[in-house]
Image (cartoon, rainbow, N blue to C red; front, side, top):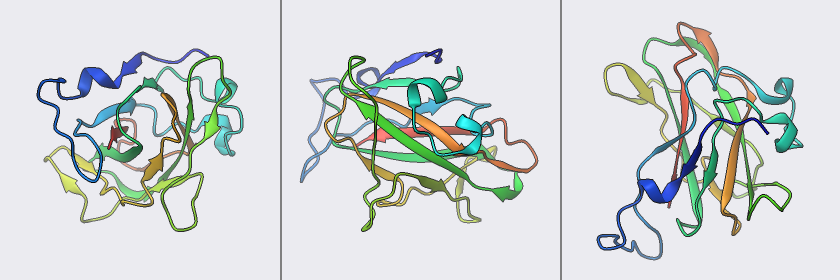
Length: 176
């Protein structure tokens, strides 16, 4: 599996001395890039369902995310160019495992009828910093249960496309 860099979520969390527990349970952490720029406009597995992450998610823009005790849920959002128009929204799949000795397993969203994919829906109401926009994460559609896993990989089933620059888009995640 020829992935990009490994991201250890602990590097992005509040230190143990200042970590605040959020009730009913959770932690505070930063948004972390899990798919780098030039990754959201490139579908894994030729745009088909990803059924073997080890052989079908191999681009260097994908990161192996390690998180041992950082929450029970993963929330995702997409950062994309403010000038992108006529957009085809990206669709992602998320996979987890305990360690490299285990098979990957698909993770489900927190929707009433759990799904194995999430559409990164862009909207005119997305927040902007003047250069990029950020999709508004839905608490059910864009939230995945970690299922006790400590390693995660994020794949693109449907590539982001549009008029303008889709190559700068990134997928970000935070553990909650």
